[in-house]
Amino acid sequence: MPWDGDDLAGKMEENLERQQAAAEDRARTSTGSAEDRARNAQVESLRLSRSRIMVQLSRATVPAHRTMLERALKAIDDQMPKKQ
Image (cartoon, rainbow, N blue to C red; front, side):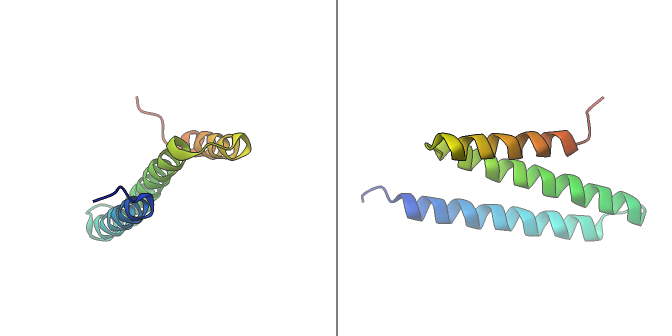
């Protein structure tokens, strides 16, 4: 069976969508205050966005596209809470 980049990309996108849905479910059902749930949902959303951008960055070949993805990655990293 030949390698199909579109099929692989589709499977990766489906996986990311499942992860997003699972994160949203966890955020809705987690214990704690509404503020804690909102913060956890935001962090999970940033983490998934970062993961998606990393996949795109690994495949990007056009310098302008790579630059745009690197800037998006930096913006996400700036929004992520710092680990202590």
